[in-house]
Length: 142
Image 1 (cartoon, rainbow, N blue to C red):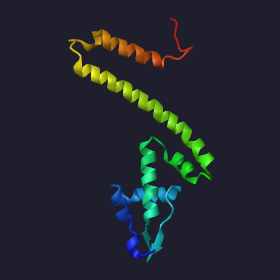
Image 2 (image 1 turned 90 degrees about the vertical axis):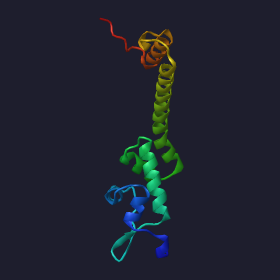
Image 3 (image 1 turned 135 degrees about the vertical axis):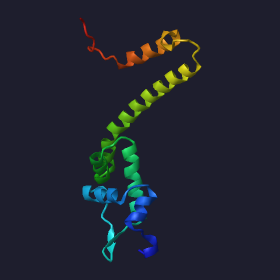
Image 4 (image 1 turned 180 degrees about the vertical axis):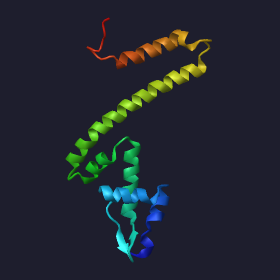
């Protein structure tokens, strides 16, 4: 590896708007492979850039650092896929909630009712959204 193909910890961190101590922490946790040392200083490669971006995207997708490490350390495609299926389902659930919230907001921006909570269309939207959250056996009888 030529020195022009590598970068110092500050350069890698700056590329992703991270503090250098974040990369050191990720190394300590086993998320980021230790960098080669040149004259006692860490030197990172393009592979580290890919790994850092993977960690950042996984964190943005709601994964914990421990979950990310499990995925990165998975020994094969089947193991990795199994680890990711639950996270995928959680992201799908969140996307549905976001879409429902977006529809409510869009309605409210156009709603002509003085008190939007009394708008029949709004009330239908809210009632259908709450029906999605009601699970069988989750009713309370007073």
